Image (cartoon, rainbow over all chains, first blue to last red; front, side, top):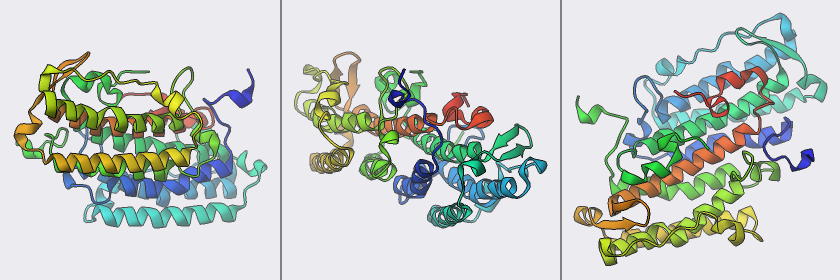
Length: 186
Length: 186
């Protein structure tokens, strides 16, 4: 098989990754800003997350995950494990905020993160530098940055799914055709 | 349980539905316009769809599905079944187009669809009008319009998932943490 014809996997290319990372704040802003609060606070039951909570989580990632961990790799390599990431930090940090505030914060913090990333002026050799995840063990800077991209997209998919599932009953018999609601694979 | 505290389901409310429908063209535009072609043509293997194919499918929905079916319900009720929808129409219709062209077409067609929807000036009684799906049988206008919303969101989630999975290998050990890649439920 000609690798150039495989459209199911891509190697990590910094410029392509940055193209996604730069768009995420505007994507979630376009999808969410100004929506009725019934959509903004929608979730999937139990302790699942609403769009509001997801944006708070993305903000905390800019503050405590991606660039801080890249900095640890570039400074300490695998000799220092990353700090543990608090997946629930946004519940206190976002408590008194509005969605427009959070969207503004996310856009500002992401722009700053990308400025820092550019200033690293990373080489291919840098991308192979080793780091140590407190649970996953040996990782590389390249894997960290690829995960940043996939994590963004995972949460865009999550927000869309949470909103769609609000109409799980309202769609009636069409439920069977909607993968996002029925959960059917494929 | 107080229904007003249930954030997992919403009844169909035309104004809330329109808020989502009006945003979808800008959301996919923000996410996709200007991305490298490797992202635009990415897919999940076999005959799964790329973002480019999905936008063509959304265009065909504006032309042949949502408003045409709503019109059949308002004109004929359940006495006339909907025309069958061609899920593969975009492969010929989009063949010589570019993604920016398709995004422009989708935005224009969706704006026109929403103009028509407003002009219907639907009452609650209208929303309960019956229609007949060629495979699913008895449906209502309300269910059709709810499905329009969920279908949009399903494809935004799909696009995000297709892009994220390009990095299924690149993320290395983080794969286990990324639901969009690992497919883990929950």
